[in-house]
Image 1 (cartoon, rainbow, N blue to C red):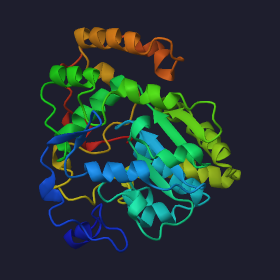
Image 2 (cartoon, helix red, strand yellow):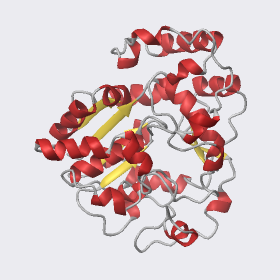
Image 3 (cartoon, one colour):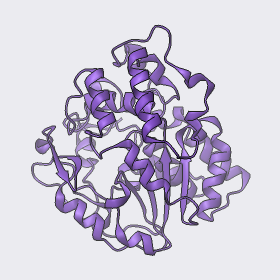
Amino acid sequence: PGTSKDTQMLAPWDFPGVSPPPSYSQNLSGEYFRYKGILFPVGIYSPESISIAENSEVQDDDIFIITYPKSGTNWMIEILSLILKDGDPSWIRSVPIWKRSPWCEAIMGAFSLPDQPSPRLMSSHLPIQLFTRAFFNSKAKVIYMGRNPRDVVVSLYHYSKIARQLKDPGTPDQFLKNFLKGEVQFGSWFDHIKGWIRMQGKENFLFITYEELQQDLHSSVQRICQFLGRPLGEEALESVVAHSAFKAMKANTMSNFSLLPPSLLDQSHGAFLRKGICGDWKNHFTVAQSEAFDRVYRERMRGLPTFPWDVDPEDSGPDPDPSPDPSPSPDQASEPPHP
């Protein structure tokens, strides 16, 4: 566990040669701005930082992790961090997760950081129309990770209660309505996945889901290695799987976000790595909420391929007696599983 001095040293802006903007954490007001119609939180992003991401140069060996928020970004960062080091966990144990795969669109953006090792590993939540234009004429690789949007809603609701840059989510009903309308950070989940899924079939694009990783992490890691052209021996592969498992991430100070100060992420009200399971939405959605969600989902996703969450027999509806309030019980908060 870090001391308060360590916490200051390991804030998200702690990159070589970059000093924090003087009022970084004070700027986390819970206010949003619009950029080309999409909502972004003030303080973490700015119109200038998104424009820089749109117009930056890309290297052919760059690897981008792209997700809609709360879809397993940090899990994928951990997996790729291990694959790039042939299963050796020393990097994930010595460097904070946000420094291993910095964010393209953040004010302290990945493209403006000096001396990044090659290949550069970078993360983004940007919808396809705002993503770095140079990527589309490059050999750089994108791994897009999808997740059941019902679980995304629940996770985003919890996260909005502890992340200082996000608006208070309000009631579960109101938050669900905002989510379905796309009036949340990074816009509509439906638009996001429908935009990126158009890349399927291109050799530098891999679409994989949280549910597939949850079901068979070993095979999923093999698929990722094959996509990256980085085959691993069985021992290295087993090491990647073991060190990216939930218990390992939860215990890793460099990966569980415990180094962040409460001014950025207040984990006294719930853990960042919360439950990490598939189908948790059934513990939270009411029957009415589930029906409202399904109506919008069917309409917005018509004509798209079937996703793993579409065919889960357990996903036919919420539990008979769901809790109307998606706030974590004390045992959930203290036993957080996967990011």
